[in-house]
Length: 102
Image (cartoon, rainbow, N blue to C red; front, side, top):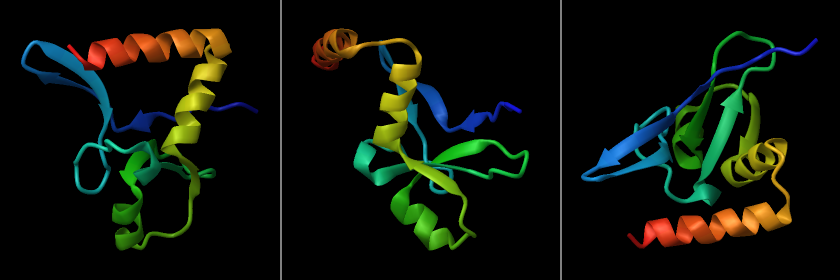
């Protein structure tokens, strides 16, 4: 049976005239700005929301093991689930690079 698990930590951050999506760490509240340092965690049996966190913050918290997936992997998985193919991903990566330079 499928179930839906909410995700805590994805926000839109306004910075002057620009608004950008960012993931915030569940523990320290800081931005996860390097995908290789971020994780998603969720409790496979519970009803609590999933959340994003810095790997180092989660290790320091010393919580019991939960289900997890690296931020980089989760983002690609999300894009694939939205129906994007290789050409779409390449095009959107170029668009994101242009926007980052503005």
